[in-house]
Image 1 (tube, rainbow, N blue to C red):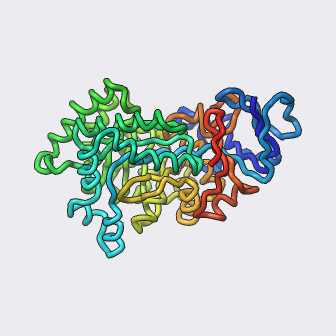
Image 2: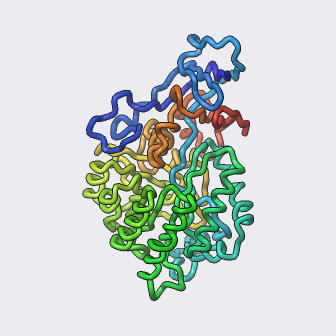
Image 3: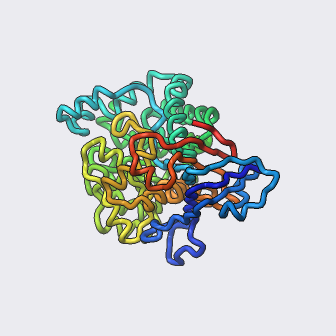
Length: 419
């Protein structure tokens, strides 16, 4: 037994005892105004037995005389962050594109000049599984040091069967070498590769009929994602791919409405996606349909900030009763950051979320966006002992004093890691 005691501010983010009966999200989460309810315990304590949380309450009520103790006086404890949208496993460096953007080039112009996703594709195709793992591990470990205990990782920089499988194997091997949990997503539909520029339908067919079956057969990805937006995959192409993925038992995610109001949110509702992500240009109809269909809105404020784009309308989504999650979108071209603490700061300052809403979005709702909120994302009895211990006395300090790492320790499955 391990006891974290004298926690100055314990933020449980406990799921509602009685979730709304009309909610279409079949897993614990908080939506709308309920995102502002954190379940704070002052001078709290957490008892951990093995990999699970055994007890939560005030320190004065903790009766575990034989437990090993960690004094958390002056500390704030949160559930470990769940970063539900990343491209953290990749090869190469695109700092030159960052410099081009600062000189005025747009995301689309860089892509048309051979940069963007296709630049990373060339780097991945020239890499081995081992080199991909070696290059990506420092980023994953840095995410963990910043309090992320679970993260999703997408393929999408291979863009053919051989290299998409290479990326998914690299994700699998990296996951075996870090304490964080990594959830794999297949994103073969990230862009049209140059060899299929004149035959895009053939590439869509190869994703649906060749890539998805082998990915599913080898158990390499839990989710299937598509970049459904202007210049990438049409709604019709996306639905063709999703039909194949669902047939093979994969859950669905959508890169939706990042660059234009493209109908991606509405499609996410139609195909019963677990989440639709980005949503900078989401329509009013998209908001209403996603809410009714129970699709989690995963917002990526770091990407909007990095690209100089308008932030997603988080305030409107929450006010209209949606469940909003936050993620980094860590990737080499449009947000080179694995820091969820910075993501919270950008959500509050750029998208006008409250600190409470941002914490819920980065923990419980992030877990719902990867269908894990019955296991992680809040500090509750029976859940995995995944927590982050911050060297600040209260949770607003995490956003107030931004741009630095406030984490002192991370607990993953009951094991403490000092950072």
